[in-house]
Image (cartoon, rainbow, N blue to C red):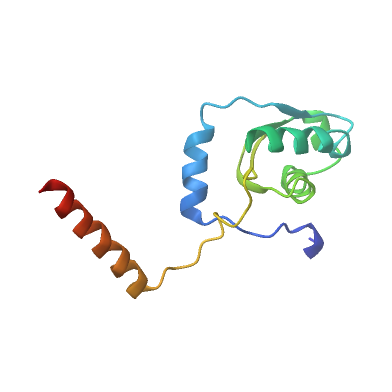
Length: 129
């Protein structure tokens, strides 16, 4: 497997879990058929731009040329998205509409967290009295 086919990992496992639960009610909006990934890349980009979270269905004819893992990686790389899940022949892709900054999380520093908590704690006290 080439490293150039590896899209950057930006979502935490917790974020992926939340997105998987949101995607249960979605139905596939793009189908990859015998003509392969190249024919649907523009549609995947458009759907990701409009919706953010989409499902892509892979037909059996597409699997004769490429594996489902490779198809998912190509779509994620071309669409600047991340693969949330790959179950059976359905790929769930996610790209936020407002940008990746919100989803690339780093651990917060404890003192900052404590200060924010204290502000909330005192704000509640004063609102109640």
